Structures are given as C-alpha cells and as structure tokens.
Length: 217
Image (cartoon, rainbow, N blue to C red; front, side, top):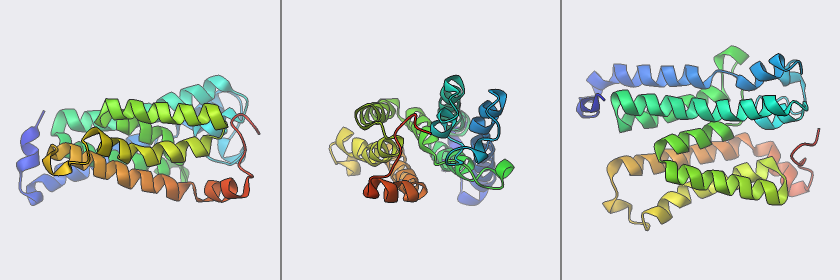
C-alpha cells in the first residue's frame, strides 16, 4: 500500500487522485442492470417499468436471477473501487474512490449519463469503508423492506441511518476519532444526501401514498 501518497503535497498527489477518481468512475459506470436484463431476455431495461437500471426495476421484469445478480454486482463494484483505492493508495484515496464509483453509477458514460439511484452501490461502498456499519446498513434496509415492502422507503431510511451509525459508533466524539473514520463518515453523509436527491420522485409518491411495492410491475 502506498500510504505515503497521503502525505504528498497536493500538487504531487493530484495525478494519483485524478487517476483514482477516473478508474472508480469507470467501474461505477458498468450498467449491470442493463446487462443482466438483456442476458435474461427481458429487453432494454431503460424501456421497462421506471426505466431505472437498478435491481428493483430488474425485478419488475420477472427475472429474479437477473435482479439478484444486479444487486450483488452493483454492491460489488462499489466495494471493489473502494478496496482497490484503499489497498494501493491509502484511506484518503478510498474516499475519492467512493465518490467516483457512486457518481459513475448515477451518471454512466455508456448510457448518456442516465444511470441508477445508487443504493446498492452505496451499500457496497459502506461495507468496504467500514464493514460493521455496512452490515448495519444492510440490516436496516432489509428490515424496512420486509416490513413495508417498499424499496425506496428502505433505501431512504437505511441511507439516512448510515451517518448516524457512525455517530453512535464513536459516541458522538469525532474530535477524538481517527482521521480516516471522520472522512468516511463525511463521505457517507454526502452520499446519503445524494440518494435523497435521486429519490425525489419516490419521495413525492411516498407522501401521496402511491409508491409501488416490491415485486409490483
């Protein structure tokens, strides 16, 4: 691990930062939902249901294996980008990779920058940054999804809880928390905010009581 990169002057570290951001973005841009929907014979996912490229919309095609594969791979690409950055260039760059892979999923270059809403990738990122909190995020998503059977509600609640999990984990004492953990908490807060932004229409439907349940078409 090239941890010394974190201590380079910013102008010397910038090429590594940009390379990390670009590689993570390209990993995040892989549209697994579109790929697996096509392989399953469901057709162009962007013309089905909500048009979203995430696992929930893949499930609307009735191809459960494709939806499961999309979920796993969207989580996996988030975790992979963060892990590679952390392993090769250090913790500070893992945060850059987290942002890059997340925005790659939201705005993939291969799909004219119209991607998914980032929930599965967010969970993968969280697991790679700090797996105990990532596990709590998964548990919160699954709990809400099982109880209410609304994917967007589970996404919003689990995303909102994740920064709070960091606060509770360290007893609200970030002044004495390791620097990298503070960075992780801040990037999680930013990504959670972006999930709320990508779910604007879902929030409106939730308020109106019109949000579809998991498995509905």
